[in-house]
Length: 154
Image 1 (cartoon, rainbow, N blue to C red):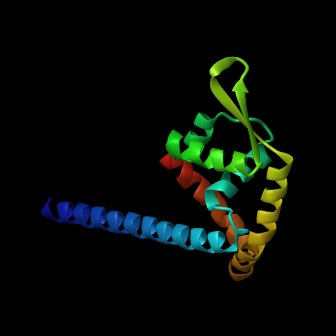
Image 2 (image 1 turned 90 degrees about the vertical axis):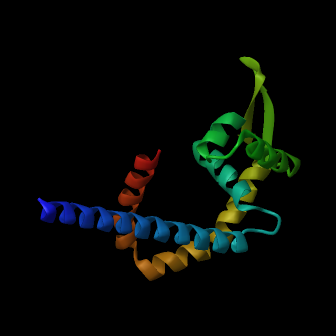
């Protein structure tokens, strides 16, 4: 009995260490990715700006500020700040929601699509270097695992 408790405790310690190692690697990778992308982005564009522009470009539909805040796991205030900056730059159009005047809708402008495309070209060397270092097959094998992790955390 005592031996099984020791084994169970050792397994739990091993599981905890494994989880800590996993999250530590992910958080460190996140910091490195953010630093490299921020450095590569065109002058004046922040990573949060690029993320919103990229999302709107891929989705091709309007979103509310609240939807964007939830999607990016930020406060409504933080998203409002980002959207205000994007609107001042002419990258997004913000209009009232015709169905509910209390809400707004955000759409990508032509200038926003161009800025997003320019940013993609600016960060492509970062992506290319990672692909070159890791290889396409490893990246393809890693993506389902990362997607499953994201789903488990959602």
